[in-house]
Length: 113
Length: 116
Image 1 (cartoon, rainbow over the protein chains, first blue to last red):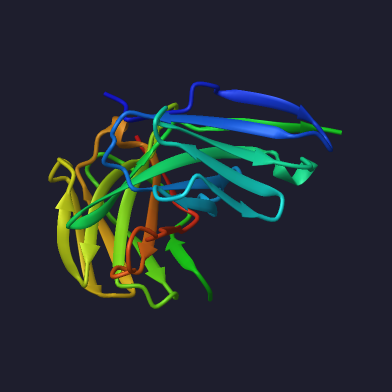
Image 2 (cartoon, one colour):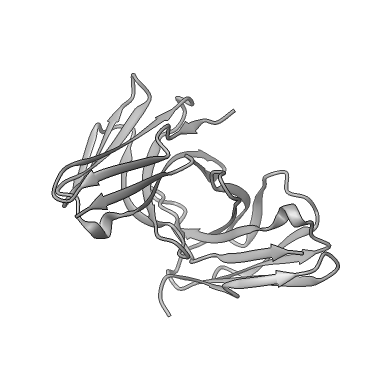
């Protein structure tokens, strides 16, 4: 049973346009959500996060939106740049003693010049 | 060195070998994690160490044996692995005790393991 799902395995966007990556989750106990970016042969790099008490968090070109009633979060990148081409993972956090991060399968984003 | 480092970056081993993966974090964190990423699958949590004590073992076979000698170092000892254990093994660290939600894990570059 996959608790965090990224239903789009890949996404292609023109440079300068907006990239929107989506993530759905099933466990209403998750209280913190994170997006990671991963280049080939590297570990995931933390990008941005949002607490369940907020519905939006912005950091430069990156904005994460959280819709708790729909159990859905999205990452907006605007404007998209060629260096944004990578695999993006969303993760949901549960604190039960230790923190547990549950990851989605990832979405490969390609920015076309 | 900064962040989270892992050695070796690549490892090829036979099923009868014994090897160890090493992780070191330079962030002053007090929790460390091992994850496994197999092809086409999400990252899977294997072990969690908090304040040098193992607090989570996510039903991992005993052929994987973690060790956390101090808050900066984490090892994963491997013995009699199977070909299906071939994967990317990632280490992460975080600072526990953050007030409210907000504990972010930071990852190392991973060790790509191939079991023949």
